[in-house]
Amino acid sequence: MILASAMAALALWPVPVMVQAQEPAPKLVDVDWLKRNLTEENVKVVDLRSDVRYRAGHIPGAVVLNRDSVKSMDVQALTGLLERMGIDDQTMVVACSDESDERATWLVWMLDYLGHSTSAVLNGGFSSWVKAKGTISQAGPVITAKVYPLPATFREEIRASLTDVNESVAREDVLVLDACAGNQGAVHHVWNDDLTSNGTWYDTEKLRQTYKALGVTPEKTIIVTCGESDMATHTYFTLKYVLGYPRVKIVTDGQGGPSRAGESFDQNHAGTSDDPETLLQRRCTSCHGLKKVTRHKADRARWEKIIDNMIRRGAKLNDVEQLTLVEHLAKNAK
Ligand code: HEC
Image (tube, rainbow, N blue to C red):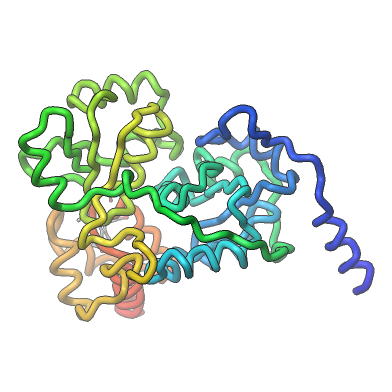
C-alpha cells in the first residue's frame, strides 16, 4: 500500500511540459498527438462518455465528467468541479467523447466561456483511440486538486440571445445558421454532416467549400442555433477552430447553455415532467411512426445507443428525456 501511494505521489511529480506557450495550443488533436503528450503533467483528458463506458475502460489518467451533473451548475460550481478534477486555468484539457461529437465540443465551448484557451477535442474520440490501439485503463485516475481562479469576466461574445437572432434579419454582416435539421427558411447545415463515418472531421477544404456554398463565410458574424445548444457547440467548433472563423456565437437564451454566476447552466436539463408516452409522441414521431419504435426490443445499453443515433440524425431531446425514454423502452422489452 505504502509503495503504491509513493508511486502515485511520484506520478504527480512535476515534469517538464511539452505544451508550451510559444505557439497556440492545438484545438483539434489526433490520437498520435495524445499518445505523445499524455504523460505531460499539465495535460488532462476529460472523458465525456457515460460513467458505465468510462468504467469499462478509458484513456489512462482520464477523468470522467458526467455532463448531466454539470447542466444545472453555475460558473462557480463549474470551476469548483474543474478543481476537483485536477484542472486549473493552465491545464491543457483534452475533451474525449465516443466520437468527435457534441459532448466534446460542448466542454470546449464552456471552457471558452471561462476564457480557458488551452482546450482541445480528440478527433474521432474514444473510438479512434481504440482503433489506434491506444492503451486502455480501468484504474481510477490519480487526482491532485487544483485551484481554478474564477475569471473576472466571461466571454459573452460567444453567446447570442434570441434578440440578437431577431435583429440579425436586418444585418448583412450577421448570419444565423441552424445546426439542426428543420426550420424552413433559415440557412441550415446539420452539425454532424461535418463528420466522416469514422466520427472525425472532414478535411478543411471540403468543409470550407460546404459552408461557403451556404453563404457561411468568415467575414460575417455567425450565430449558430439548435434546439439544444449542445449541438450548436459542434458547429461553433467546426467554424471557429477547424476553419478559423473569427466571430462565431451560439444561442443560449431559453434553450440552455452555460450561465453567468448564479444562473443555472441549463434550464432545459433541469428536468422534465413529461411522462414517457408523451415524450415518445413529442420527440420520436417527426421522422417515422411510433411502430418503428415499439416493435423494436432492446436492452438499456442498446436503447441508449439507438437514441444517441437518433439524436445524430436530428432528434431533439435532452439528456433527462433520453434517460426517461431509455428506462421506459428497456422495461417494455421485458
Ligand atoms: C430526425 C429524424 C428522426 C427522429 C426524430 C427519430 N428517428 Fe428513429 N430513425 C430515423 C431514421 C432515418 C431511421 C432509419 C435508419 C436507421 O435505422 O438508423 C430510424 C430508425 C429507428 C429505429 C430502428 C433502428 C434499428 O436499429 O432498426 C428505432 C428503434 C428508432 N428509430 C427509434 C427512435 C426513437 C426512440 C426516437 C425518439 C427518441 C426516434 N427514433 C426519433 C430518424 C429519426
